[in-house]
Image (cartoon, rainbow over all chains, first blue to last red; front, side, top):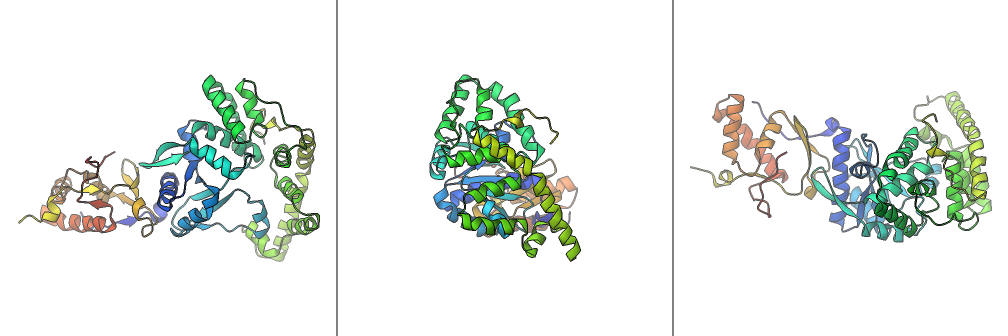
Length: 326
Length: 108
């Protein structure tokens, strides 16, 4: 037996271990800062059996919105910092910040709200907090989202960015094919009650319709701009071009052209930040610019489809019927 | 003469987060995150010692068991064990104080 010393895990820290510990850490940090926070998604979804087993890449936490700054400062005091995003894209970051740490291989997504819940962020948090449960992660108890919350969060997350990854399609189909059919009548009513309380009956309608219980009639287009924007985004497959279009509509007219120019032709430093893999030559960068514009153009049919369905007051449910071909 | 500091059983500190595997454990000191921002990994001999810290064994007993396990002279093993446990105590990962609920440290 030789000398035994204490080793920081450092580069030997495996992702699966880091994520479990990060779940415990996010909760402990909130408790130490006196901020209410719910661990959500990831291992919470696995705990509730609403997604197929896979290794999570991050920990997600929803904090009470009024005290988001305090929670973030508490994380920063522990060495976590927000992952830098190209300035142009910051406008699209409307619900969470991704925190990273030099000694951790996983991220922490700190949410102050979740897209798709159309109630106010403060009311949303209070409703979800009132339903919280205790879950043990890495031997440490944390306040976590309950099962109905987790089902709605998973639903909305998958619907809003179906083009981002085929996994979202698989996950929402797992919900409607395996999770929803196994719910008891009490659980179905609870899910609907929660959707009503958090303003997501229309945004999560494609999944809620599978509950096989009466749900309120669809809200017509033009009633709520946030709902119109959601429908446009979902039917537009959550493509980046669609996200920009929806965001631009929220801006004063004179700011739209400035945004359009920046989105279509971002500054060189931002482009390099977006595509760090691109070689440093001007020719390579120009090529990356045109490839990016080409991808945007190819998203136009989705953008138009999103606009068309939103105008008809339809929340697109095509993701639930697809195979894994996209 | 018995050292009173080493005569009482060693406990893992309360409030640690830990992920346990068959051959290693990763531990995060949640109560002291400000100073200890990232986890520790215990494998090999450190894993063997960590597993013996279960609220029932004293430091001397841990050294004795480890000496038996490795087939090494006790007086050769003890200084290494003492040094390692001193580090654990210094970092607040273990304590001589029993948990406030009176339970022994759970072992996987």
